[in-house]
Length: 350
Image (tube, rainbow, N blue to C red; front, top):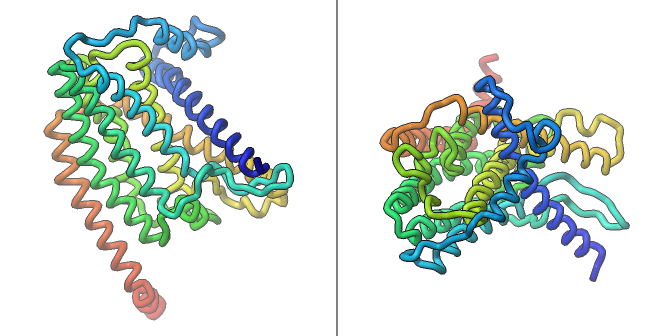
């Protein structure tokens, strides 16, 4: 087995482990953020400052009774959370976590798979994730679960349209579907958020809806649907659904950073006079700092803005976001087509 293959396998294990740890401790961070905003202490019993609370919660989930309703579709009931967890974990395979690193005589990038259609790969797996929610809700043979699944699937499909159009504007600007190329095109501080501010706004709103996060958490609206599509789930089947939600939030924060904020790039990174490996490791730290900020933003919005009604949610998606995304796409196309003419007119006037 070649050294490069061993390094890639190690990279897969590291990224998968980091994804699970981040998802696990996002629950702790969520509770602490909520506590600060509500003038409470939050978890503080399990370890110093409650830092072991996620481990306690995970142990509780493992040891809970795992039951399957008598009238449910047994195999589909089991398959639903598995699909949700699988699709959430697979999306991290194409994200460039850092630049080039040299170890053991081999040079490689901190990316599991650099494919030419990386952003389409992510959108494809996000779309498949809908099946995990829909199958779980339908197989439960519970009307509240079914309503929650229908809400979730229609919401995710609706907001995927605006999200795809927002991404298309970025693809037109950078000229590539590869996430690595999109990151490299933003080197030197030329982040896409400065060129596509409307696309960024549309994408982050759609990301809230795709992750079923408040104020778009109508699929789990406890005042109407108890627990939504996972009402009948317990133990680690429920844990898979909850984990998948936090993994999706983590991946959404990473994709936002990659598409609009330069990923692992940071200003003056090439002027520090450090080795290539040092620059790469600093870039990884900067990337995760950006991800942490957006995860905090997701949590901040959840504990600040009240939940929408379902008609308001669909009205926003179809009548506001999609038309805005189409307008942004037309403006981007016009600018790319007539950019030279616009610049010539500008230079003539000034």
